[in-house]
Image (cartoon, rainbow, N blue to C red; front, side):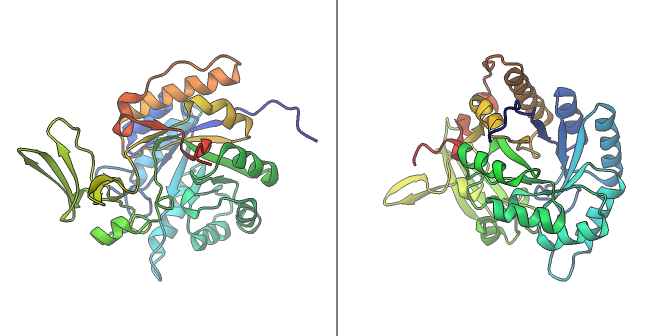
Length: 335
């Protein structure tokens, strides 16, 4: 028998790559903020980003004082035989009273469940659990409370999953960069730079990036490989290999993925009806102005839907990648 209860208000889970961004997200209306430690235990391990232990303690105190939660992403995969750094990250997240840890590696999840039973566990998108059986395994074996679903499912598929996995919660991405390469577990950046996104936490690390200006425009390189050539009047994007233009059959085009941002504002009512627990905004490497603008937009959108009002007209073109937006796989028009 179908439930007649109204949909629950989803949490707005927002990125914070710095203490300043954390405060901006909380002040703009985030229900939760997700962060990482300043090392390779998180998948956004870039210079100038993330938190040391003191900063995280202060950030958690600030968020809790405002009624918000803090989730710690420990979502890379430990080196074989050297898990100490990851074990310490889990221990510190528990010690500092984080509201949850977001984990991807099954061995680390097992360690956290056995050694820190008081710490709430969320399953990272990098674990790629996309069906009820996989989700049930993590929930029953390790006590995982929430799973971040890969960006390959339709709204109808998400609704079907939610109907079978309760009380396990689901979290879906609603805005930001898309990653078609197995949700950050690809080998493209590793092949070119020798540094792995899912182990070292860096995709296209800044130290390997070069821009060269010519009379024709700007050339972007990653570790000596040309990734893109931009015309003189064309914005020069960051040289991420999957978003490079390559020549095939004598035509230069984006072979893997176009620089386009996910934006689901228009389908928030459908995602809420599908039973999604939390809406996740991507962008821990982005500045506080980006964070504030996107959080405010989605706060207004969620509040409007829950109040039965029409969705507000909100233009986010200026902060989307390539100035383009898509609802991605949620509305698989190609099926």
